Length: 255
Image (cartoon, rainbow, N blue to C red; front, side):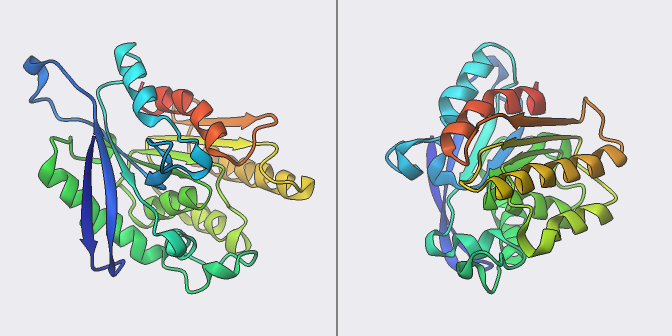
């Protein structure tokens, strides 16, 4: 894996990224890779950097699926969050339950991803261009950042991996924006647990909001081949849960 630091004028700060490029035989080396961008890069690969010491195990999962020929060779770009700025960067609107989300920077983060990070990756790695070959994803606030970025850049991403999205923020702001969207990625994976929080009413709200988004997407014509929704009974809001669901998400999005 490679590590890079990108100086961002949109974020007004440097940002570390980690790039996983699966290995292929030399004869196929010129074939470009589809690419998947994932938020919260600290939590994807390395237990030493992951929250609670539990990563998503992205490297092991991707390599195993490639060996099984369940998915094609893939380039995965993990984008580190901004530490104390994570709450503001990932949200396009304030979370009324989180005082650290004020002065939201979600629009600037979307610009960083599409106008700085993606061109950097396309300059330095053999990635296939176009929405069909470009995915974005994340969990919790990171899922909101991925969904918002796709909504304000229609036609930019062909695959979305959305785990445990905080769709309640801003009085369901993202759901209202989603209702107005006219163009969606070719494939979308939505995952959520039924025990995301310690409060039963918040858990019900979280699952209900995912179903609301699912209903909108079905209305927009996303059938079984384009949309997969997983309601994981008893699953918590954790890297462990997201890691467990990752193989199924990748099989659906890239299989």
